[in-house]
Amino acid sequence: MTVCAIEMTTTAAFTIAADGSYAARLAGEGESLYAERWTLAGPEAYAVPLPLAQPEEADSEVLPLADGRVLIHRRVAERHAFALLYPTGAAAGPRTGELQLGGVEAQEGVRVRLLPPSPDGSCAFALAAEDTVTTVWQVAGAPFGPTPVARIPGRCSGGVWLDRAGRLLALDRELDGTTKAVVVDLGLGQISPLLQITEDSDDLLLLADPDSGLLLIRSDAPGEPRLGWGVLGSSLPVRFPECLARLGAARPFAVQPGQALMPETCGVALRLPEGDVGLWRPADRRVFRLGAPAGWLGGSGLWSAQGRLHLPYATPEVPCGMVGMNLPVSPQPPVVVETPAAAVPRRPVPLQQAPLAGR
Image 1 (cartoon, helix red, strand yellow):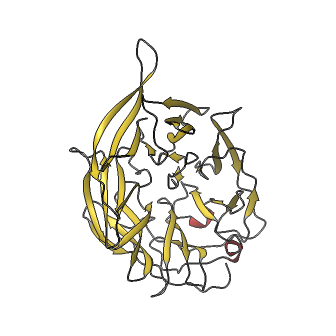
Image 2 (tube, one colour):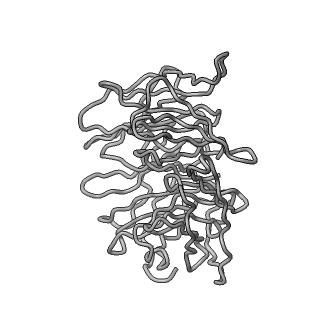
Image 3 (cartoon, one colour):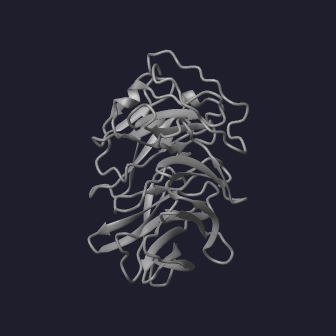
């Protein structure tokens, strides 16, 4: 399952593990906040609260691992501290276990935040960004606590995984006045360009599907920021469909997996500015607009390989719920897209500018 974790800055934020097995969020109200883990792999979703003696701060971040533990990132005094939370039984009833992982020194002007869940499910990474350099830290799964694994010149944001091994990480790097997506090989610490639509354009990568190579992009190369799509490793340029241009500041949050070498058939879910859900495929000339469920959490969700989108929600009546919806069939003929021989090449190649007309 391919998902997108959004930046966790509010209690409505909701992050799903890369394999769709678990999710995590900060639950509670006011100053009584605690981590909450959702189990999604069974026939029905259910939530397990993970409270500790002291409530969590509103700016804490949580991220689920594939083994059911929840990583939490807290600002503690002069450092960023990381720990693993997990439910544990006791004679007095259920309790929350906590395993401290260490921390990273807090520095003025350096923002530290968790990256989306790693595809391998066992590691977790954080991004420490300052004006001139950005450091990728491995904060879970490293043998000796938080470990720096890459340093990138420039200020980086975003964070999209390009492979299933959790080695190729795409970041949006601001350097010399422009922002362009680059690829960081965490195994080698090497950096290479990914998006170079025009020399002066800001080219950001929003989402990627490792199975098909589909990339969702936002660029101002057409004259204003627009959503576009391309294929990793393809010789074809980025396309900017008119149906996406009409959506304004819509943001994709999930891509249908399992469509190997068929990027044009992947369902894409978008959070629309009005709060609705948009469903689209590259093969379609239109976006289907559907109402979001009440209590939709964080604008997040996940696709099944069968093409059904699942959206998490929480209301006073249903504190842990998932609603499913299918992508409607478009009456338009499909778009045939040339795909590379391999869905995800070892070294991504830059995507160049597309004609701005047509699909």
